[in-house]
Length: 231
Length: 116
Image (cartoon, rainbow over all chains, first blue to last red; front, side):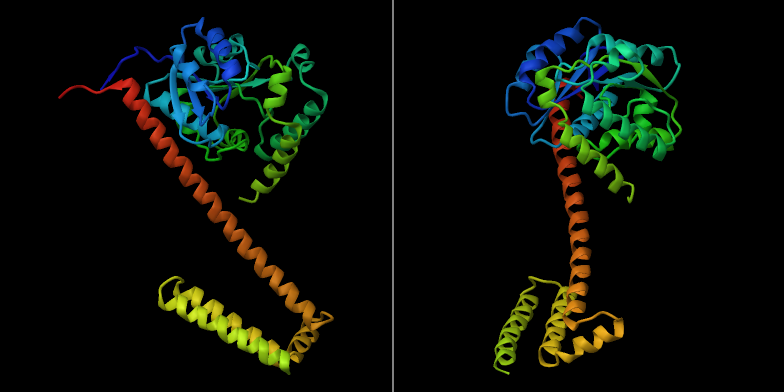
């Protein structure tokens, strides 16, 4: 089997659902570095896939929408299939910057840990970007997740994560929708995988605030987290 | 008396449907047994309503009707839970199929196989 594209050293996995407005600028931002980029189009009904294809990145398409967790898993599976050594998860709505991807990869390259987790709450300059109510709900989620997993994190629902190949192979998660975030952390705790938090800046624009997790969804997430504990 | 006779006719009809469905393999054996027993129990309470009162006194709850309602609710919650589990499983299966298809297409697009 010949892999046409050459080395897949650093792989960025971007799950995307109807992000035609922002995907191009996100990809241009990332394309400046020598990354292998995988966009997983999660059943978008707009031009997300074709725009991504025109930017010359790998595009995988889910025929129907299955959720961010599902899209992430598909992307990571593909990245591993293609021989990726390092995988970074990245959002398609413009909230993340390529400098954050680099920040996540550096500790992995230096073998400081197997997993890097982005946090909005390590630097005060990053904290101020987060809208008030959201910050409060995140705080609740952090307290709860730290209690139940034994991890000590400052941000438990951040789409920016970095994995070494072996960490990506070890971590399994099944939830399709937003619950995958806590599943991943639980697995890291359970399998005692070396992790560290990395400060990142998440830019909230009117667009991404509307598109991203609504505050009501975060409420629902907290409730689901509690129910899932029964599993 | 008239009410009991009318309801009994309906129960006979309902039971005949259960038998029919079982014979044509629309429902399985355990479903057949479950629904048969259910209609029998309903008939007993229909003709001997005092039994629910006896049951109520035995359990320590006020009215016979209340006991029946509490039991029904518990049974409904149980079935709801089972339904939820099956639903989750179905969702997982759908995602696995969608993923398989997506990766298969991607393989076709990006990975060229050696010509043997």
